[in-house]
Image 1 (spheres, rainbow over the protein chains, first blue to last red):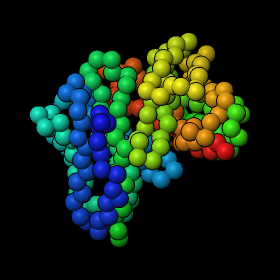
Image 2: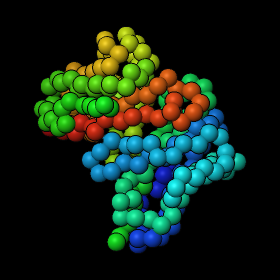
Image 3: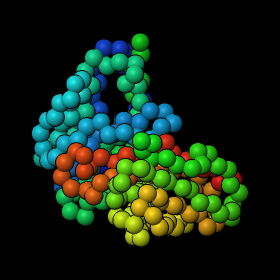
Image 4: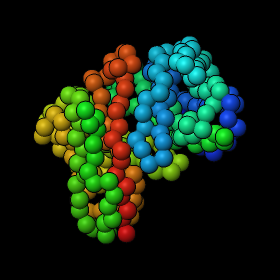
Length: 112
Length: 117
């Protein structure tokens, strides 16, 4: 079983829709949770960062962490065609922390 | 600032050939990483370095070697390429990892696409 599970999609939504992307994990030691966005043929770039549980909002993006359920989410409001990309969740523990574990990524298509 | 650059962008190798992938960063980051990305597998850490002159194994190190002779450069070597090493290789760098977004962010290069026949 993978430490981090992420539905690969693809997920196709109309412009303006609310998008929900999710990951589950098995390692209760994970404390740092990230979402990276990767455009086609580009390297990933950090989109959201959360430490421990709770919500974090940045513009149209909201990251949620539920450590009791080992479940993290990324919500995109008013989705735009420019949001079309692959979204990778990532997480690491508090110690020995150079090893960040990435999900496989969810491909998102936002149709104009 | 160029950020993280990778050379080459694309390469085709025959089984048994060797090659070196070069990564350079101009952000004065201590940590550098090599990942491979395969469909359905996500990014998997091959090797990493926490400072000049240091290297360590990641999740999938077999068949690869690395060197970090200068702080800004991290080289990934394939001594005898195999078809299983066909992948997209990403280099990344970061500050020394600790709490806080700036310290957590890994900056990725554009990737090297490698095809081993």
